[in-house]
View 1 (cartoon, rainbow, N blue to C red):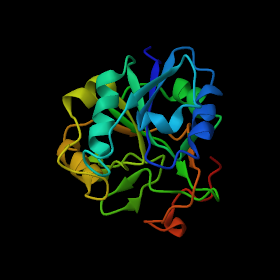
View 2: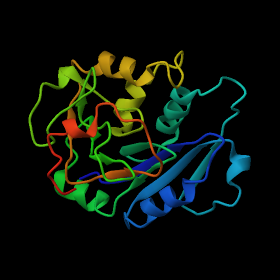
View 3: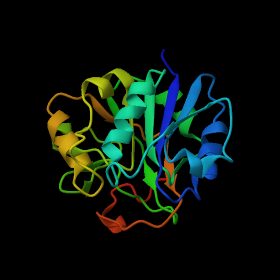
View 4: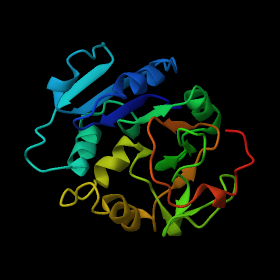
Amino acid sequence: MNNDWSFGIIYGSNVYFLPEVIKSIRDQKIPDYEIILVGDSSLITNIEGEDLLKINFDERIKQSWITKKKNLIAQFSKKTNISLHHDYVKLNPNWFSGFESFGYDWDICMTPIRDINGLRFRDWVKWPPEFVDYYSNPDTSEMYVSGSYYCVKKNYALINPLDEKLCWGQGEDVEWSKRLRETWNYKCNPKSSVKLCKPKQHHPQPETDPNKESII
């Protein structure tokens, strides 16, 4: 079983949550992993470690060019599995053990995402955004992968890069999802979960969560 991981984190001018996100990865005690940070390296001189690869990115080239950053992570990754994060998404303690139990038979994988209050954020959803039961077996040709966080095989990400003509806020995750969803092996792993470090606007609304009684 290939259970090695690259954690690719893209960041902008605010790196306040990065230490917390990195600690959540290190606390998993994963035997074989790396952390790839893509952004202005001058902002993270105080963040160090043998598990880190810093890729300096000139933000002046193109504003909010997150598609380029994510594609760079896939290109530099040395591991089989990639967990792609924005800089405010941290792992909950059950994350790696959950994947060890769930398995690695997927091209793209989503896990539960919780906001700072523990409510469900945009994770396992159809498009337009509508929550799907974590334990159902939906038609994934109707699904959408939230750009805030998802897991993907390195080789799959290399073959199917994000469209670098698009930037943050231009529906880059919607375009990628629609392009791939007729053929992908997209699964939800309800055994692992992540949490947002800052408030985010909800869409869909938490009260529409079919798993709201579940303990994640």
